[in-house]
Length: 315
Image 1 (tube, rainbow, N blue to C red):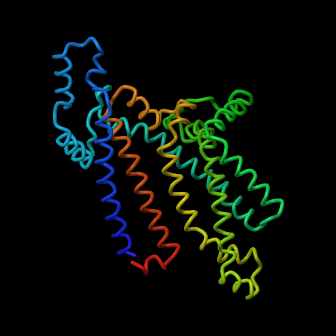
Image 2: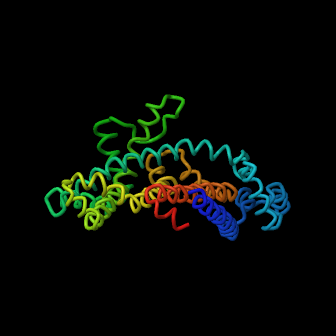
Image 3: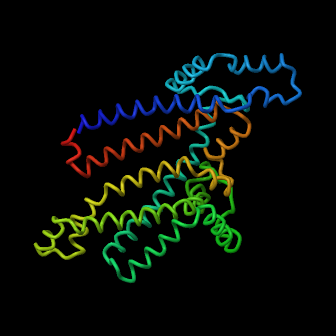
């Protein structure tokens, strides 16, 4: 197991190094000069040059890349061009919204998908299976921002159970903060739950046709007992893959939902930074999100080894 983890850890480090190169140089070649953007089109050339020197934009790209990576390794992401505040502080403030939102949505998605997928697999071809598959097809087809607007219309405007937007803040208490994140989390969770339920059903149906499942049935186990004792664990590998990908998506891809609900998360921060040509913020936030995606995939690989010991024996 240790050797398996070390190999996956080395792959993680290589992926991070390649990702940092791609992120930096792709963003750097984007058209437009941050200093000129900040000062406006009527700024004097010497003023623009002075600001470029102050921001460190007059240095070579390789030198700036090495300084950026070295700073990240020390926990220093630099200063925002626009707000003149440390980027790490801006990210930390927004992370306390985006990370709980992603975890909340993933929890809801899993709680919905697992029972739905298992129920559908246990009743293959029956009315319950068709009902679940119909609901999941709708969930896959409808975008999450449409769910968000429907939820706001029903639960915020008509019933007034939730606010239409904004974040209460953790200083107001965990209950108030989670209450303000509930509708965004549901809007994010519903499409992901539909995907996860379909994967769970398909994985279980594949497992039910295996020889060891027929052997379990021949030993006297009922279909449901065989499903819970032997089928569920063996069907978890594709499900774990989807859960890992979903967490990455929920953390990095919630920008539209954050805009709909006016949440001060990482998605809105990236959107604002792109609008103001604040390159250091864009690079740092994207790198944080890539780190989260790669780390989640690493943890999923370790979970594979725990679920299926055969993977450990192959390394």
